[in-house]
Length: 185
Figure 1 (cartoon, one colour):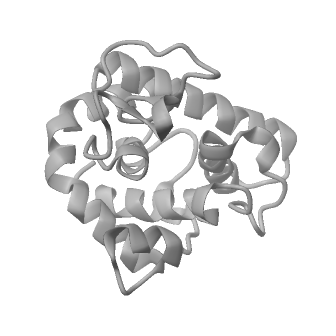
Figure 2: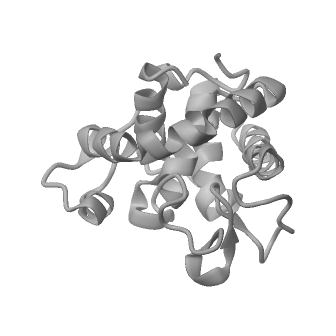
């Protein structure tokens, strides 16, 4: 299923930085590193595929993007302790920052994934308002960047990830999403 917010397969990406690739001790970076990390998470991701697909359909968001954020944020749950990450500041598979949002549902529930997807969509819409001349895919990628670092962190399309974790967040998520798309998400 495609997204009304953009086509992830038409979204430019440089993939993961070396810093992000180092988490898996990869000797490659870029799109190849992103794909390898997404592949590492694939078996765990399959546990959530039906929920991801349902939320994607309901919210008109590409399920591959939801899966990619889950992969980046929590490694499909493997990086969580009791549903929590980021030193206890973020909750669930998609790591909702509880300093800004109240968590809803169990860490791996449809309610959680719906809430996080709604947050992503709100960021995409805000980016479109701030940058009305950007293409649909640029706004999509800008919203993904904002999901990590906030809307105010997105200042230019040329260096969209300058203020994100690893300085590669949206590029890594886009590359992971392209991988998950190839796996039926």
